[in-house]
Amino acid sequence: MRSEYQTSTVIRVGDTVAILSGKDAGKRGTVERLVNPGRVVVTGVNISKKHQKPRQKMSSGSQTPTVDKGGILEIASPLDLAKVALVCTKCDRPVRIKMAVAADGKKSRQCSRCAATIAHKEVSK
Image (cartoon, rainbow, N blue to C red; front, top):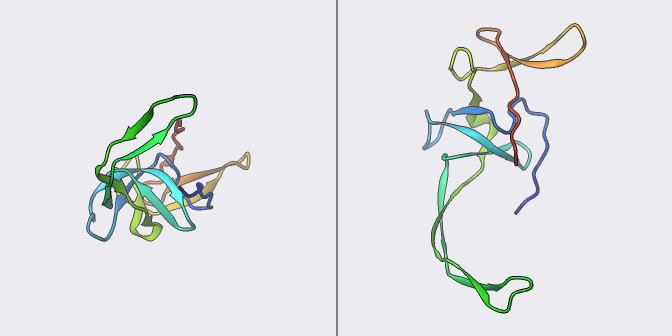
């Protein structure tokens, strides 16, 4: 698996986004992780299927192998950042975001439509 990619985008892990174009246009989901420059994985959107054979692997400290079940796996594939828009928590619509600087120098994300501050949700891993 690729390492997580840190980027300077206004979309962060845990945000609710709306899909603007493609086969899943109009759907909403939460951002699972950021991968590669300019790509994002959204839960329940852009699902691809992977056929996997059952495999045996030895776990450390055990004498018997464990069997990974095979079958058809459904995996969320990355989307381009241009295809998603952040959903404002107040007006509940996909909006553009502007950065606002407070008097103490802290930056915050602000809805360009209703000027509401969009808080960052802490996501536990």
